[in-house]
Amino acid sequence: AVMKGALFLVSANLRIKEGHSDLRKLNHTYASKYPWTMTAFTLGAISMIGLPPLAGFFSKWYLALGTIETENWFFLIVLLVSSLLNAVYFFRIIERVYLKNPRETEDQQAHKIPVREHNPFLIAPTIVLALGLLVLGLLNLPVVEYIQSFMPAGAVEAMR
Image (cartoon, rainbow, N blue to C red):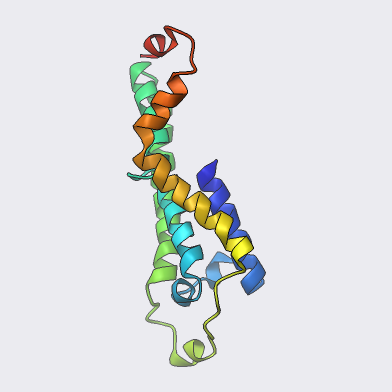
């Protein structure tokens, strides 16, 4: 939920500033025009893919462990394919944002004026959610132990 929230806020921020949310219009100037927004996007995308140390990795890790324990190979394959598809389309967007397209002419670059980052009231929640992905990933074990402390006695052992 945190990663999708961050990505939706990134989309809203870009839509407000650029007037569109068309992924085909993204290019390498966005990383310099919107550094905080694109950082939040990158963290959200990497978390959706399920790469460590972000929160998305641990959610997929626990799902994978559960499917392996129950020998539910179909759902494990679905989980892995989902991560692969996420990687394909998110890395394509990251490539467009951070790497210059060699086919783009100087004329196309000339009209691109650097834009300041958004209103702090728009960008702050986006950054908080993106950093939350990192914090939840890095502090995964204490968070899981805290949640387990509210579970009935024996429930944690029954899940193992």
